[in-house]
Image (tube, rainbow, N blue to C red):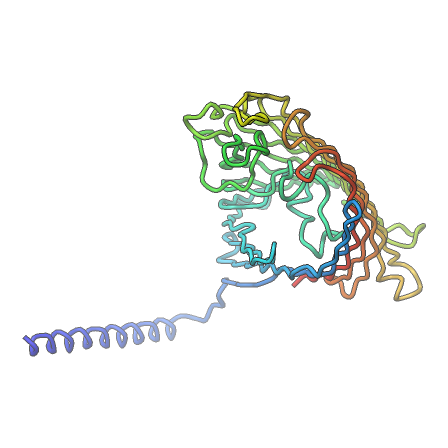
Length: 395
């Protein structure tokens, strides 16, 4: 028996050695007979990172803390002139724990100069902030406007398929994106009763047979592409889990965005104006809450929310002083209004002012002051003031 095992091992090793030798010989022969062609495959790692120090004052309760560094590597792979892959990971310290997230991961194929299709998890073109402006070194302030991020009313990403592109209209440019995703999920209150009626956009597998459909159209009317106006929609006929009373609770969201970026000699620098209005409407549904005695009772509300932000920044790039050229002045206003009668009913107004110093074209130090006045919400409302000193870098 031992002799048989040794014989089989010798035969197997001989076959492997022969195969490797044959393949190497064949590869060398092919390479010698064909001219060298450089590979079109390319791989690149980019990304961004940020860290900082926050001073907070919430209704007289003061605290300060160095915030944990966040690192978001972006992987770019180009298989050919038409086939590409992109992905972004996010490593961040939140509540003393390391959180690892997948911002997006999708495959792209260029159909022609006006059309590109991509599939996987991608940032949704719902307005422009989450898709284009949220990275720390691009966002001119250390924080996001109200309505975006955790418990926000604007979707950030989704899993599905998208067709996008642009057309040059002989000066003006028209861009578009249409897509379908698994869509948001409705929080019915069984897990977090205080959030019944909220939409959860961090959805991976679909919880029903309804898909979400959305799109954005943008117009850059001037030949210098200084101005862009966009309109976005995002809707689904079902947000609840299959077999529940919320299965056919639909949602319709829309956004209007605006951008103006131009260097103006009269003010000796660049002016950058951004803005976005978000509106969310979820079909009316009945939810369950416990009264003061612990007995369940039904309640309902008109599930409409909206948010808005506008931002102005100025950088004196034409100043005679090199120091002044690297400064940037920023101001932002934002508000958030969630449904009257919901457990998460909130009305908030926020002002933020910042001064940035650009170390390089993709690295800056941001110093900002922000004040937020709220009524309702998870924290019960009140006034929160914050001073932020952050350093962000694009890799």
